[in-house]
Image (cartoon, rainbow, N blue to C red; front, side, top):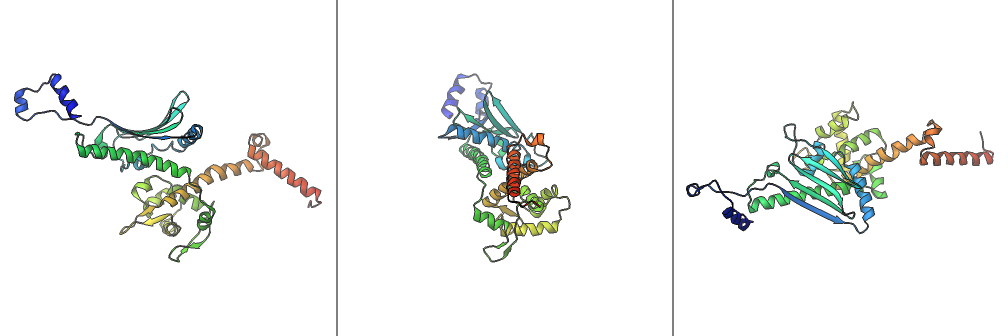
Length: 319
């Protein structure tokens, strides 16, 4: 790099005179833009593309400041300059997603129909507290930041997809048990409004960066349960810790969300919001027939009810 620079420095005209050079004035190289990529090739391209299109739907809120903070590994406050947003790109049949942080961004797209490409572009090294001059230390720091951003985005996406627990783990969480120290671990019952509000709030990306506190988690739960109190939060933090969702950070009142805890929270939240709630609406007996006929689930359920009523009538069990 330096030999290339010196060669062109001799060729191109310069406003600096020999006297300026004698006084110590000279040119320095600075980082203008750095791009680091991660490419994952799928042996079954169609499966990879289907996964990516589903992932895009799940990641549309990545541009929110709390999500950006995790992906880019930086704290974001109301004083942080720049826009934080997500952009979905369509080029013909190809689609992609971009997440912006200050002057930098990370984007994903499906390359040549068979490879998931994740690219972090750093347009200002100051965004990450790294100097702009081309030095070995700054180069290594920027490379590490770029690779870590790519890995954090991929890890968050994979955790959200592979979140279904085994039967034993699910039973341990939804039923009262005891933790490894023999202390009671109260149940986190699936479908309970307070539990759902608690676990949905636990899915916030900000917890991965800043940890969990009584105050930070209670503020999120209170948006779903307006009368939620600090005392209730204290009890819920205890049962989250004893069920393995949280681990206390030593010498602090802050907790760290475990990998299993995040997967379980995502599983509870997605299952309730995307499976249970819409399914119950489709199975509602009061649902008008002209609407029910559009749903395969509603049609199947009503056919089952009709067949069951017929079986009961044939058995002469009608009340």
